[in-house]
Length: 275
Image (cartoon, rainbow, N blue to C red):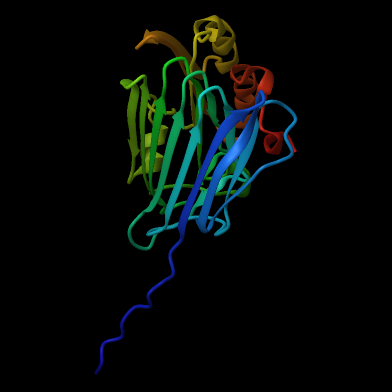
């Protein structure tokens, strides 16, 4: 008998890159690259900043899929990046989904990474990497929010694998690093008081800028007792870190939106978040 070989499944490959620069007091698109399932769109600008919407046309990720995003804001420019929808990570038969994000901001530039939530399904496997390189006097707002199954849809994540790695540098110096790992017994780990005490949704916001300390009191008021916020002066810049834990995605977004709006100042929220 001839052995039956398992089918070779098509995997997602996505690579999106964008760079911007300042021209006549406004941020303008300089270069754009899109390959595979990666698409980048630009809503009509309403301010001096530029907003980019990242789209994964595959509609979700599973084991073996690879997505790469990169953005470069030239000196003095202002770029905000978000996603068209929540990124869904489905059950992985083999391997893991991998998402890589590389962000760079020149002197005096402002860069915001504000994707919508990542939703993990039971059996999902995801490795996510975020690298940020800020020049002197550049500022950045970084957000990642993750939901372990949608409570309203009756979803439950018992087993999954998730690794989230951040490295943020300012003027060449490492000012923030973290590695979050959970799995394979996600339900048991989330039930522990030292993790989320049963909460299914978490978010981390990192703001680096000269006025970070001034925002600390207001941020703590918004995070509430189920969250936390701290400030440090590291490498010549202010660093404000906030974390939120919520029972589900709906409760998380209710607290996340005003917090992101506060930290993003006059730019507010990406238009797609409020549409």
